[in-house]
Length: 307
Image (cartoon, rainbow, N blue to C red; front, side, top):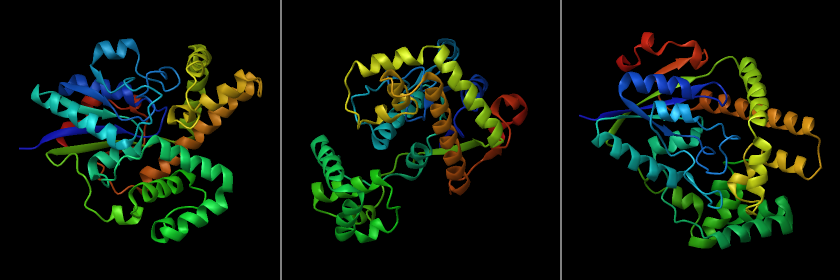
């Protein structure tokens, strides 16, 4: 009999973690992170990682365990997550994933195209080429050797364009050809239940605005000062996390504190909008969808284990 895994997901800033803690206590579960920024050691405040009291209440896994100098990716996370699932299952503890990174959840469920890891030097080369020749010329180059894949994406999707270029130049094989191979699977031995929260977006925006203010009160500026002192490459994912570029601009005296806060609130609200769009168009089977915030739901009265 297959064991069950839970996924608690939805847009940022809605309070998924508290709900997951309550569910964990009810099911004898432990929490596994499914947020692509909460993995980083250096971003505790800005990524809104669980508090010390949360962690004392229920064991949490895959939070703050990756150095920001690493160019982490979804496949690495999936492998780490499966390892944690197996460890918990051996102890008869239910794994409960919490996070709003749809790509992580979709990939661990549906699998991933097995493409060789790209060396850092080649990633730097793609960035240098893109910066040197510009987006239009880069788009033309990539279109010439992999038109099939390029037609599926926006001309402005620079990250995916660079990825297509890197894969072709490293493997001498088109990205579209790699995608036709059978996906690498992660959860074939498990059942899973996705619990999705999509509350009122305007209320979600209000919560996001309030959370950003709390982050500054808790020391977000000092956190980014320490991050900048590490002199990480600006192309690394951690340096693009919501709030990092904006606080960096504030510390450079390029913008005022009020502008900095306002910009972070805006980029986070835009992220909430994209997350809503992603989940509304997702083909993943949702076992239960709530239009309320997690803190408006009584875990015990929902009988989630019966779905």
